Amino acid sequence: MAPNRRTNKTILAGAALLVVVVAAIVTAGCTAGTSTPGTVVGLTGVSWSLDSYLAENNTLVPALPGSEVSAQFGDDGKVVGSAGCNHYGADYNLNGTALSVSPPISTKMYCEEPEGIMAQEARFLELLGSAAGCRVEDGRLGITDASGATVLTFVKGVPADLAGTAWTLASLTSEDGSMVPIITGTTVTAAFGADGTLGGSAGCNHYGADYTRSGANLTIGSLVRTEMYCENPKGIMEQEDRYLALLANVSTYRVEGDRMVISDQKGTDLLVFDRAAEVPDLPLAGTDWVLDGYSTGGDAVSSVIAGTTITAKFSPDGNVTGNAGCNHYGGGYLLDGANLSVSSLFSTLMYCETTGVMEQEARYLGLLGNVSSYRVEGDRLVLTDAAGTDLLFFVQAEEVPAAPLTGTLWTLESYSLEGDAVSSVIAGTTVTAEFAPDGNVTGSAGCNRYFAAYEVSGKTMTIGPAGSTKMYCNEPEGIMEQEARYLSLLESAAGHRIDGDRLDLLDEAGTTLLSYRAESVDQP
Image 1: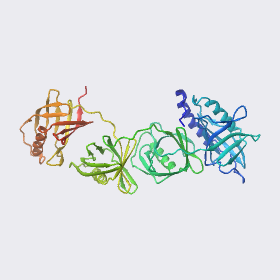
Image 2: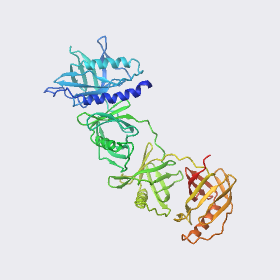
Image 3: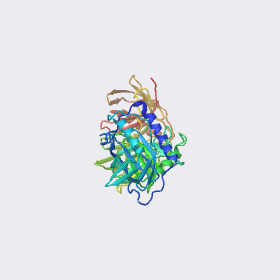
Image 4: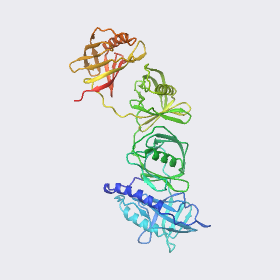
């Protein structure tokens, strides 16, 4: 059923009050006594959905179509649920078949649809608070008043399927048992895949696990997460640890409109989620992906070393390119449904001294070459091996505005050698290009300054013979050969491509000759 439409003025206030309500219920103490022999069997551990209620004229009438009224009786003596518009909570005492419910406490939202929902809600809460007895027969729950008249009837709620749903955490149970909202400025998510996998952000790190569902029962398998450390906002790491600990302890769940509540085996609510806005699955090809984590063997997942960025872009032409953390790389890929294979990987030959970067790069390229399949979950990409083990975890890269060709200082990162070989720029040398609006390109070829005329029409580009100064540099070794190769490739350019802060000069076949990075851009 579609969720009710709520007025804007009360949504935020209602959501805040819900946290207070749940916290008050948890901390107020439980007046329920121990159930006696002969007690009603099957009341707890079920999400009951309202079927009918006693109207003012003393006749049972069906619940309004399009409304969602529920009740879940926990083993801890608390009943919670949705009254149709607002969420509510109360204490209850079950003694044999005798049932008493304390006056329910609810949030204070106002709903306009369906017509009559607020009157139904008020009547429902009144009748629930007047309960004196109950019975469960053939999957139905009846609640009676002091005269023995049936005032509320429920049917077992059909648990919503979690597969393909995504949620954002609203509140969680703290160490003292109270329900508290998540820290402002943090986002904690949970996405349930159709393949039985659960993943999301725990606030700082991304996590993953397998899950199984049977009716309203939910089991989360062993959790793995990346290993980043976040300092801000204050308390984010403690919240993350608490969230993952609670997630590992879940036993049941219920979905009430756009809200999901996860509870432990005692029926105690642990985590409260709001339904996340739908994010359509991004296409594999044409999306800029940035690595978020990678497998280090077994179930262990490592985050990327701080200060390094590893990227991947699968082009529609069957090529994959990116930055492996130190060097740029490329290769080919083949798709067959969800099957993905990457082959003929090559990279530039730079060496980066930052501890662990080269080992991380080797690990990444090794895993990329071992990929067998992929899946996209919204704005996340997971690459998997033939055994079904997740190897590489990507998120969509933040969009980088395209740097203008003119007015930008472009610094060369790699250049083509003979055949398919690509070389990075010799360490200690800097090769640049600045395209002026007047049709001249100038820069440093590594040793000498150079200059040439260029023309651009759409994506095509031609560069005339380059003139240069006539210095000779002895160091570093190979600099003059690199300079000659660079100027030769520059004159061979037939096209160009700008992707964010990267510029590639291409030959007539579309092969990349020179790859630059935007070093600085003149501000208008």
